[in-house]
Length: 356
Image 1: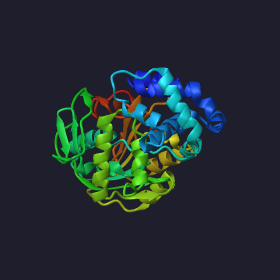
Image 2: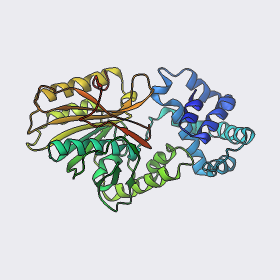
Image 3: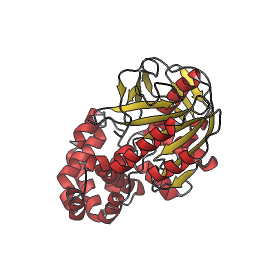
Image 4: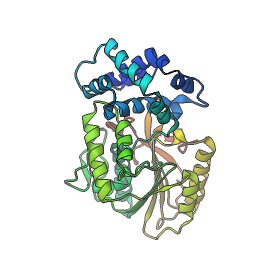
């Protein structure tokens, strides 16, 4: 099933890895048993993703020459035959089982900065309607790379946002109308994560790289550039539960003339239902206090309930009658390779708030 999804996204090498794991996982019985007895939904917890990231980490470490050679050529036009895959993967499963178990125990830690294009496009449309500086609060920040969006060069449709000439350039394929042109002002950005990573530590940076699909050189290079930038412009990420942290942040006075924006991307699936419901309540309560001088917005890039599409959902509060209406602004690739943009003014239909 996971291999079929990878093929549908055009990831032939990843699909071949997953096929091989299906044939060879018995070589690591403790790993296999951990997956088979997982207490919850495997997809929501990203369990298979954790395993493939662990394999990628072993390949990057060069501890296993066959696996390293296999992954080194992951971007080639043809995929090696199944025998090569099975030999390399089996060796890694047998000799690297303890390391792979550690990857299964640890949380999924992706930090795909390309997703920030969706937030930037939303902020451009919001700023066109009401030009206010935005203060970003991100839930599930990982290493906080998205918090540096003001330092990135971002192209969304025909519109250029962010910092021209940045080493981090984000330009997803874009269909539909372009967002509004004009500056997006960022007053500040702060995030939270249960287990935040610090890219100043090589092991944490390596962990992020392992979660990039092998062979995706453009993503790897962009991640490397974002990590280098984060070492100069250190993002602020607190270690805490997202719901408890958000409650504390929303209790802090909001400056007049600033837009408060709560952002999360591919995060809700890892949260307990009670935390998702609490976040919904917190935002609804804070939204009831919003005004034109102190507006609040929620921007979510998340799977829909059927996990058939990743959607960009926007909810705004500013003291008007339509407050709390959630708009489908776009659909996008899970790793933001493309956006099918609808926009805020033309979006249809409306949805329940993310997490409901």
